[in-house]
Length: 101
Image (cartoon, rainbow, N blue to C red; front, side, top):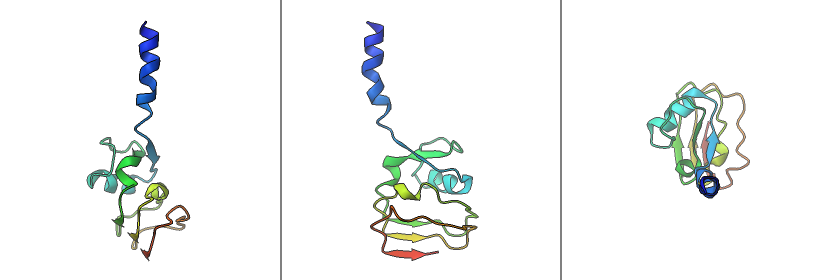
């Protein structure tokens, strides 16, 4: 009986999809602005907290990697200037209208 209960609960554990955010400065910014998962420096945030964000200003935070930005699917405006970025893949951000980088 216990095995059946555990198996029934497993699908509930996968509802909280995570987005990988390896840059500590970017993750700290997301955590401090209510877009994280409540756990600092674990390299992830809750996808449900970021996929509804339409505007993001991560300027001047010494970010070197914006991995995770691909899950900001509602993003229309991104300001990420004055960081240490060497590449930026926005191919998944199809709603993006304004970029200041």
